[in-house]
Image 1 (cartoon, rainbow, N blue to C red):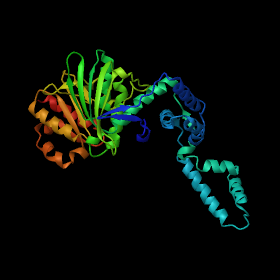
Image 2 (tube, one colour; image 1 turned 90 degrees about the vertical axis):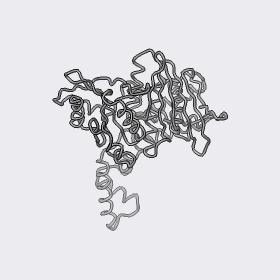
Image 3 (tube, helix red, strand yellow; image 1 turned 120 degrees about the vertical axis):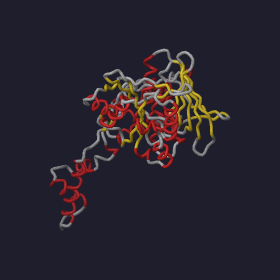
Image 4 (cartoon, one colour; image 1 turned 90 degrees about the horizontal axis):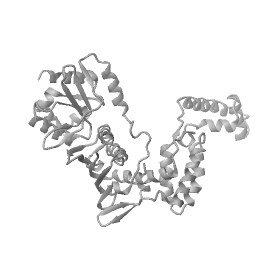
Length: 405
């Protein structure tokens, strides 16, 4: 993802226009090819060494900011080998030994002192110096680099421009039509995994309207929330027909509008786009499969209709051996507004919506929510509080509550 200082855009009255790059430009393709080649041939080289090689390429280009952005995206794709804790122990032993030798007389000059310490460790002085701080970030060797074509890198850059701008959004609204089930399902899965504050309404035909609160609309965890929102955008680019409008508040700048749609030909190149599942979801699924109750965790969680044509995206759906289906929606730290609305909706639709709700303990302790949760008949019967992620036993107990209604 591009950092704020690398995002290039223009302002046209109240509209913001990202400076997209032509992925077919021969000049840009040549730049992208040079940068990609550095990483393809750089396996085993340290971050520091890679920066020494890429710096002349970046600074030599007519628009260094653009070149820096492309290089940043390549670094994001790279995996550097992380040193384990043994390096800390090694450094501690070296410092202890060198302190003891420094207290002795007759060591001569600094070079002789280095040789004495290195010899006791059966190392060359230069090798000792290299290993001493090998766990620093710029000393980590490149271990993996999933390569891509120069054109794909330029297309990724255009997508990353929008992602960076969405980090400064108050809200966004997505309208799309998608006749195919797979892309539609992928979008709703990511909406669930990203834990965004959303409202969903079906439109005519295969159309949907989704309103998402941006990171500037919440008071805490704004960076984490913003990254989750930005992660959603490449999925949007896989839809057939779509239009996104976002309200942005630029740092020390005006409130402006960003409009992006399918006509701009934005393409995402993320190999994990369709298979990403958060670790906690996997752990919960595995643990739930081992429970001995009569409930089964369904593979896909369908949308649940609430009121006034609004739908919600549950985190999980379950089915009992007697045929009863129940959905579970989880509310995290920044879901205060969504939770209040959901409690009101469930109270109005009592008995008609099989939706259990789990509330993060930190959210439940907010003064604005203490009374609404305490006085909600629905939450008393079909809700629970959890830390980080709900335990299977507590979920099963809540699901069983629907068998008694």
